Image (cartoon, rainbow over all chains, first blue to last red; front, side, top):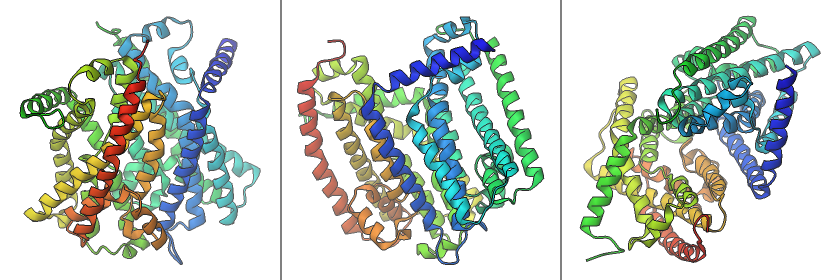
Length: 262
Length: 265
């Protein structure tokens, strides 16, 4: 266990050092995050007006959903995208061999090797939006409620990671799966809005098949204190389930790995 | 006779090889086509929303608009900057520069080849859309179809020139694709991919109309969906953007090539 912590510290230390080489990129990233959030809020505002609601959610309540989406999107750019997109490169160029030979779990190495600070401002802005929206919507959080929010956010993060990792792991067979992650990202964009705003068939799809609902809507419901207990259990169950499946699938995929050019 | 370095034979060979090349990657392109589902997600949101009436599109008008937006996007999506950046970084650009053909034509040809490969997938998605939403079915009149096609190609040209402009900056900075994000974000929100621009408040709409973005999706989509639209003004503005961007791209490209020292040199 200690070995893993030590490795993690080294991984992130070196990643940060190399990222800070590109200072102009940091500036561009900051502008991009700001513009993107501005655009999302503008788009969301189009659905609202005097007396209008979106799937039974008021403007401030919908802001909480948007806030959680921003947090998860920031998490994706800090952690998921830099790590999981390189799995494809490792498979194509055969450098996965070197990862597998290391005396450390390969999934751990591939999932946490690097970190990009570019998404951090997004996470901060998202949290700010959640707090502000929650405040305006009249939500009052007890310490227990706060803990529950964190648990559900963790569950959402785990689901997102597992889905992404599952797709990335199929590159063992198909090599180029970058496009599949693009499809996933396109579908995940639906998490910007409360799931109740979608028609019934899509709602089912977003709850059970691609559980977008648990990424943003359910944590927002917890903040507002109106989450139903079965949904919480379902969310936690799905998170653990997805993670176990992703883990097993990776071990299964490795048995089929034949290295590049063979 | 060669026009801009092109003659019939070169065009045939370029398009033929690029199409064959793209057919090899058809599975990938199918996924690309599928990743354009965003307009459909937005459509389902708008259809269930209280704000739908403010859009000024009745009944099936909105369904048709978003389907058209999806189709226009499919055939005007530009990714040359990524291909170009890779070519510049790996040094593949050097032999292209030696040929008596502007390298940009090569990228144009690969986009056209990719669009042809995409066609069947886009048709399948359209068929599925009509199966789910049979009421929205329509066949545009020949006139509208030809005009929409033209508008989509103009949109493609504008998007291609915009991205070439940024790609030319690759000659100065190796990470110019980061700048592409700054172009994509206003495109996403102002082009009409997520909401028809008639949904915007007046001042945002006025602002948007001064940018090229609404002419990339909203205008061609309205033509295809047979929504009322000022055809003359739309085409004139599209043309104006092309006339404005083309010399800029060529100038910047020429200045860039002069600076180019190839990777590893």
